Length: 536
Figure: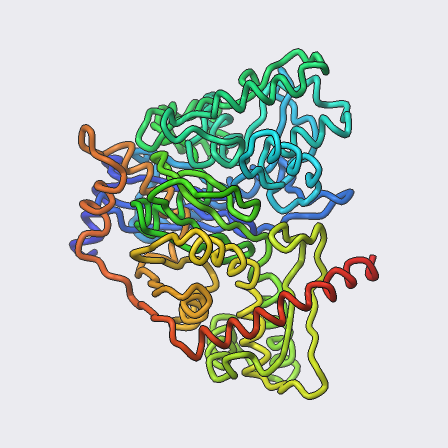
């Protein structure tokens, strides 16, 4: 066994490791990092949300079965690589998809199926709360779901004892603590960037709004406690240890960092928690997080105002749809390849088709597509229908076809980024990319650079994603110096001396081509709306 492996074995035995777990849209990933903050083991579990009675959801069985499978595979990876039994990491961090609606009664029973971020059923509540607060309240925020349930007079509302997001729920069951990191607090309800808490004036406005209902709770009664990065968020209980690891090997009393949403862990994983930095996470959904120097001049429904894990103000552009339709087309080409007797790996297939896109015309040759598996609030769609359309004289080629689907995966995002960069004149020093769209070297980041008009960098560690970022938050909780900020800790301990593996600059031809595509995109939204109405 090599010297490095022996060092890692010692870290495992001494508890100088941190476990990060993130429940993403299509995968639950567990990552174990060592004392040098590098990943040393991992375990994955694939899952899919399901549409039941018109609601995008995951069951509690999905959640816990997936978590246990990912942890079991991580433990097996540790044993296979190092011959060690993982019993007590130094700290644990839990992350998941932000927003959504999980409500429980006093006995801890889930009152309605988990309503994920993907649902676009809260339009009325979103509009009314945005007007009341004079603050953008997106449809996927927990408060929009709660108020929509109130407007619909759903029977469960008076029984609510606790309302929380997915990672806050998992953290609660592992520790018994009803807490949430400030980054995801700001995705439930407007946050006060000065107090690092829910905005009290808006809490009072909401309580006054629903006072006539005479519910047995006020809003503060059912919300978690807000915490910032590095604070004590409790420790793993015996019951929590058995929930995560039914084998009985994992020990209790392991400290946990505040649970954070995938936006916060994405910012951490890309070293973009400082002012004038930003990152784009592109997978099943896509969102951009831009750390602002000052508050925006206007209220923009397309822009969420959230925070970093430390509480700094962030402009967030969140879009429900990104790579699902693109992946489906790649899968179709893979099926064709197999029918032709060719054995091509998924990674190779993506690489060939993505690189082919760069050979396409800058404006995609007149082709147009919409990747809307679900609704898209930025463009006013409550439902989606994946769609490909062209003029008879459009130039249909494989390169133009693939470039079209890469462009449209960022179409809704560009709509929001244009508001930040063009209307609000927000300035960035760097924009970093992570997620599945960037796995093929040089392609996704080139398309994004042309769309955003700013350089895009993908870090060497970007492939580790939010689970790694969550582990870094756990490491900060465990190993930070007194008074050391998260940004300084990341700079000193994690990213010092590391450079992005690739930076792509926007080019005039590519940016102009993307703008031409966006003209078609905006004009064709009426076609997408007609498809939603016609194809029920």
